[in-house]
Image (cartoon, rainbow, N blue to C red; front, side, top):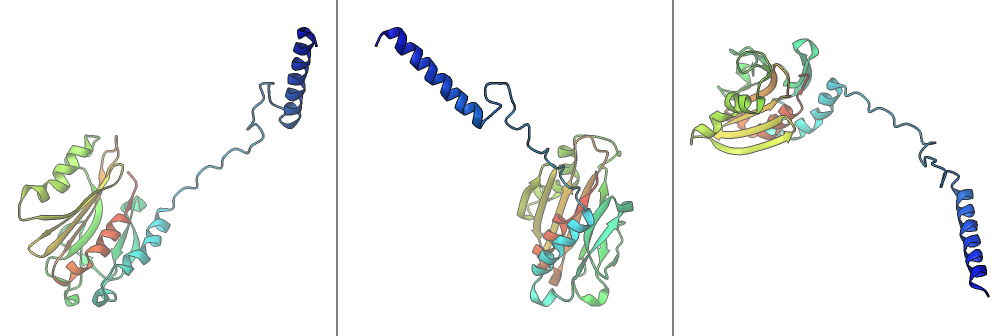
Length: 214
């Protein structure tokens, strides 16, 4: 067969193949968008902070040791006009610090035991280098003294950190949340003395359940 005829047959075969593909995918070769008919992705649902904290309560209670499972119970509470939600111990009373709650005297949970969440400014309430400011305000104390043994030091997300330390059989838990450009940060602090020190994991989980609006 002449070479010119063979070339024509090959060209015709390629055209038929393209035509067959075009029948299966009409947009092929025509500038069509393969995803033109796909539905637009639905927007992510807004997070309900109260629901988020309440969802963590079961895990918090599961971490309580048996002898404290009834003495310490957490509930969800909105603070700062609903801009801060936390898991707080039920029945605990205001302490000597404006953010702190202390167990009732007859609970026998340790003289120093206290827990609370709140907002801080590390000086003037204005945007600043929060990484540096919060390390100095919340965490530096644990590294500055050899009397503290660091049990946990973990970044828990972008702009958040938790540190747990031990000193003289007392547990200290501190967590903080911050955001670039914000004029404040949020914190959770726990001092667990005496029998309450056994509930370290539960209080860590309670701190991590905190949901601030920065």
